[in-house]
Length: 271
Image 1 (spheres, helix red, strand yellow):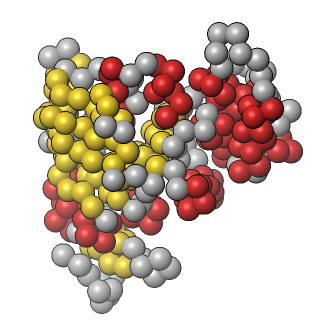
Image 2 (cartoon, one colour):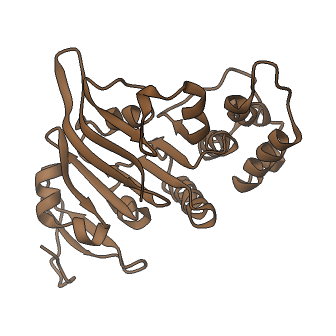
């Protein structure tokens, strides 16, 4: 079963084609990660899935219906997107930011309800921000700020969450914290999560489904252990590497070659 599908999807800006005639299926209730080199179209594709970019041809289907033909409010109650590097107005508190996630559920004259408040409090608790609810967003650390934005998408209470590079500019500790949070959310509530990640090893660790984008289309897709190989990394990222098994999680672990000192050991290399 698929939450989002694309049919013969072509995307671009003016005369520049970024994605061409793409057929894609996003598994329901799983974490899907888009990987690929800079400028390959990952973020463009994600924006299209959220109806932020109109296709030049083809269609994005949300639960079987063309997303372009659905009302904006209907889309917002089914799908939430967190773009890269969002910014909050100066002085906005964590609670006020998360509260904005409930706006798609508000009618023209509908008042704030107990359900709205409950969803905001649940989002605060899930992201471990309850004690920071009254603190300004711009006073938070990078990791806390990213958790606040994720909490806003949780309060929107959609089955599908799209995130564009949610770990960008975060140190390793906060990257793991954010990805653990999303993994727990998927495990607990079976929400469909689609995100763009640059770190190939973290993508392999957290994804149920990987999609590698190259040359305006999907180069490969499937489970990380079925997709990641030296050949894929060579073609998609133009980089030579060895692929072995993550000693903690058993997922593929990419070890890139470089110009530094190299000590060759038998690590069970995959080709």
